[in-house]
Length: 249
Length: 335
Image: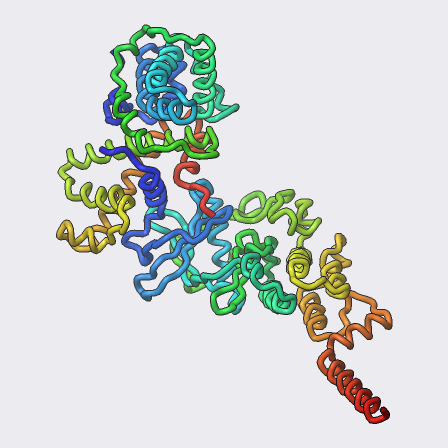
């Protein structure tokens, strides 16, 4: 059974090697591990993309998400990726569009086979998350897929940050971070450093230092994942720029 | 963990990209602007308890060469103490090794935005004169800006005019700024200065021959051709000519022929046919504003009359009104 436990360290290799390269490895174990990471990192952006941008019903989106990855694994479609021609993410989406167009043409659903059928992808949760999401009007398709990819990347990195913080006995630190950086942006009146310090009964300087440390750690975790999901250094740098260097002029 | 909303996601992307300044003298407050090379943040200087602007390299430009360029820009600014050029306060490295420099925080409008609500030609030209003053001062100090455009001119809340973004400026004597010693220079940067001279005489931060730096539409022909060595202050005269033309054409009144001639001369393709320097260009604009004859335009008798009328418009109108009144009195007395 393929383990693609979502958003945890188990689904992510400790190595910084590019899984994109490993997808075409002759070593079956490496190839399988790379594929697991690929599915763990991309299934939700793929599902969300199909639901929001390709007007797929929940059941079609489920079938196509599973089918796409099985198809890619069985036929080795992703082996043909050429870093010279496009970013991996862009190429993956192009493959997905081709697959969906083909499925629609066939106009039938098929029970898919292979190892992946045992994989528990949490479509119910993914569908629940979409309830308050609207299709962005006039949004560029590539941009929409990128945004979902970044959302999943941040979500998985945050899960890892939370797990590692709790394991290290840093509940307070993660609590401060969550209150200011995760809950704060959702509130009408965002809390100040002083508000958070008062809530946790710590000095404001501690809040400043904790936020700094947690943000650095989050950034490092995101970079680690991006490096693993990029085929080349150039692609890595371009992806990092697209995530953190967003064009606010 | 609950799913990330667009708002939280945008916040995380922003805060995770903020420079690592904790424990340093500065506290980053928010992003102010970003250009091709650096991001400018509003930051609080904890020691002097004031807000400053902090310029740091953009994510994708972080490299030794990028750091040298930023440092070079800071040093250029440091030698240009002028009311029309933003002063540098400090330069150094952050905890993560990134180079930054702190400068005076100027909040205002870019020239293009500022003049949008000010259609009067005279007011626009007065601002242009002050841009010329700052650029002329830089030229006198051996610095050619090479990227003058409305976006790089800031008009502050109190009407102060500042020429910004000296990142691609050219030094007439590059070696001088690299080798000069300054007591304020932080020890971190000594490595930059003490590096052995490379086999290629181009130092980091200098422009390779054939490299085009600047903004299309504002670059002089010789600059657009990549002739880095041949570019001098007259390239800035050309860019100022473009700005002058834009300011004049965007004004509410038609562009006078004499002013158009001033812009045309600044915009000559041949550098030798332009004003030889910025003070000459500024002087012609001042002469135009004062109703005097401009060097760029050969006047006919009608032009002289028109200029005199404009210069002494109030007096002429007063005399005409007086004469008209006398005629009316004379006519009414005769009937």
